[in-house]
Image (cartoon, rainbow, N blue to C red; front, side):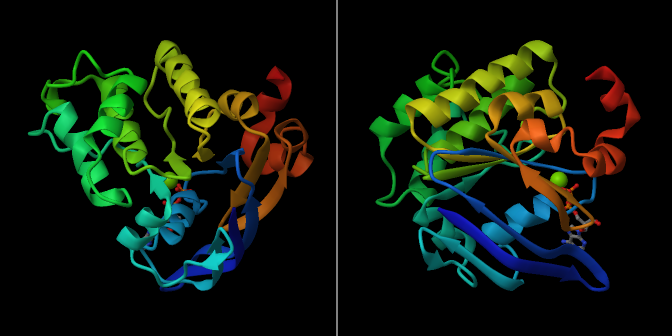
Length: 239
Ligand SMILES: Nc1ncnc2c1ncn2[C@@H]1O[C@H](COP(=O)(O)OP(=O)(O)O)[C@@H](O)[C@H]1O
Ligand SMILES: [Mg+2]
């Protein structure tokens, strides 16, 4: 479904993504992990058309290189951000409608948007100002606005960041539901290995922009290169 082929992105002298290739199959939950500054968010910025790059990215068999972000959104690729990006003066419904209006093929679909508000668990807050939502609410809102664009694939950037154990398990349930009930393919960047091993079928580890390994999570997390470069000795002892 999504093919990243030999992609390189440089910011001046810095090689943020270095000859990276990976493939995400339809229906998968695909994980990406690696140390801070490894280039994970940059990979999303390349997929969604925020920057130019060397190499190619294909979605459903067609090249999306060079397309502007709104075109890529309309093809069916949606993303969320590490820090919830919301419009604090809008209410929940209007925020979801904005996602639908500007991101969905065919424009605003109020019926589907209302279903999404209920699906992410914000029915009670539908007419509440988004600035009043707690962190979990803001994350549900950001995911809801992405879903309102009717994506085929959803890119989540560290969705668990800053969350406590209860919030993490709620978000994990939501992510599973998005995949299973809506049939949406998911890529998830995450630091919490337990989240990745429970959710994902395949896990890509990158460091300094390059792939370290890519395999089933149980194989990746026992790979000596991954333990050495990323997980550290304490992970090896705990698991
Ligand atoms: N727009 C940018 N301009 C310059 N450098 C950037 C830009 N975006 C990211 N970088 C740099 O690229 C590297 C990878 O960043 P990022 O993809 O955000 O890492 P990660 O998400 O894995 O923590 C970092 O060194 C970061 O400082
Ligand atoms: Mg990042």
